[in-house]
Length: 278
Image 1: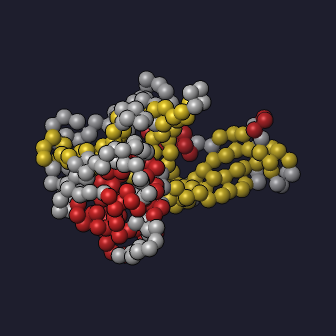
Image 2 (image 1 turned 180 degrees about the vertical axis):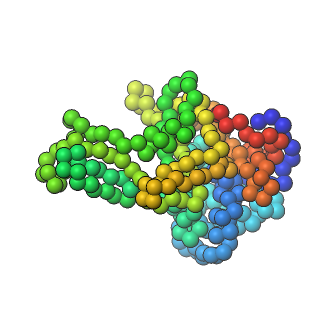
Image 3 (image 1 turned 180 degrees about the horizontal axis):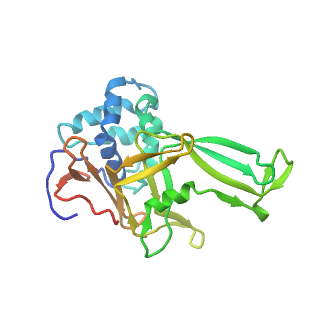
């Protein structure tokens, strides 16, 4: 990102290879609703797995100065701080350990439906989510996040050997599978899945396909036939390879609407809006 100046926000020390954690914590800190809920509910987690108190103490320090994350890594059970890990995995782990009052702004719910094409019987089950996963593919072409969202909610037909059992018909039938958002989160997180398992080499590999990220996305909600609009205010980027990469976060301040680059202990204000062809 070209053009930057010293920022008014503070950084987080890297304990060895904890950039994946720092980038997520900065997004949570800069999400005012989340920070305010932590302070408002004052959940006491002494002797429990909950992480509210540790987050509250960290955010209090971060308002005044550069901060350290030792209490967070201990609470998360991160024993080897020099091992590169996945930011998305630890985002979810933090929210699962946070009290529901604070974390529910990120909590959404999907309804997954199975419709028999023969008798039209419709069955469904609810699935909670902290993020919507959008799979990438190995390609030199730009991946469109807008199209990825459309594909995620597009119905798919199950036929042939993949037929599904229908209780009403009492046998396997062709079916239509589709999902709907039954509860929209206040803050939506999209997970662009850049890591996939390669069965040839039996290891995870990174997909380096470029991505076109819009500043605004719309998520369909069929229940009331309306779309929920979300405006981009933060994104976490990974550079390098799977085990030797680096994470940074770029976040728009809810106070002054300026963009800031959080790179561990270094925080800078960007003089330009981010280019979202990543």
